[in-house]
Image 1: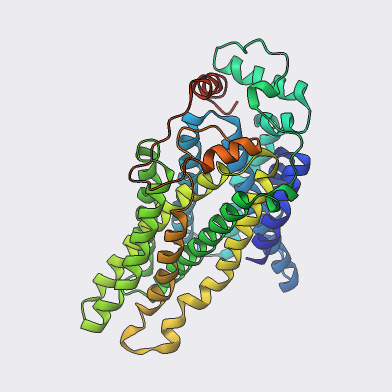
Image 2 (image 1 turned 60 degrees about the vertical axis):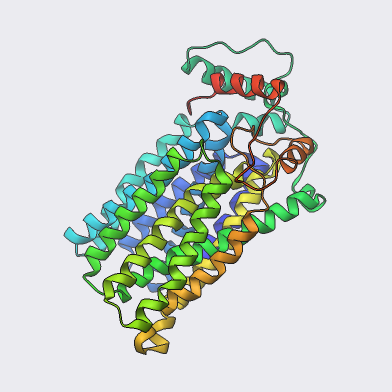
Length: 412
């Protein structure tokens, strides 16, 4: 977790300064080195150094992968990119379950888990730099080359433009300090960061709490993988219909509610499967939230500070990850009838609070990624009750988004 904490804090600023591609690829190299390093080390200090490197690598890949994915496709494809990334996490969890069941030697297990990361070394030639970031840094020629490649892969032609920034609406004047001069961005930052913190606490504490639940640990873990896969997949069918905010707010409220009411079955002496079921429902809803929050957050911040903002947000979430083992075992410390449900109550209560905070955020469904202060303010004007809120972009925005979809409907 310390590696994740350090990696997310640094990689966001590096991504905004040197581009999304460089920290992404460095993360891939570090993942290969750290994984194989753990398998072959005999020294405790070296083992922990490798684990630290793995933590940095994992989050560098995740944060920059999500940011570049959001920036390189049009509005209609952002949900697909975000959900696909989350489902890849579920595939990794399933492979981990299979490998750990059949490979009981931890060194061989680490080697088997590290081999797939070798393919990341080819990503330097497969993934282009974000054209939005290039344009925001004044590198219009390179941005235009990336857009031409994307247009060619979609069998379409790039419109005639004098300046590529007219396609991307990039603002070269903004910097990270801009986030602290805008009340709107400060509030967004605090809400997103607090939600990421609580989600990480609940997510990892629920995983760790599996060992405290009744039943076979492998069966419980398999159930959690199935629940997580469905939880990450369901938003694909909802986000472009209901919107980001209603899906997220409803899911986190239900997650918090299920965790809190798990106290009741323990008090009444209900069967263990009731608490297990409530835990799995909470896990399902948390996965829905995770599939939304990274995409939602990336859509709320301008391009030139998007990497830094998301990096700081994930940094706060990793602080929550550091606390999760202690919360998962709080029931063991107390003991008694509430041993299984008490951790769920402790985790669920903050979820209800931050879910209410999230109601303040604007809806981003169908909108272009913000590039300028005007874009930020336009999103601010779309804030409201999600049950009656509906984005209605003007004619110019509709045409721009349609052109971007035609140019950027595939990653390469």
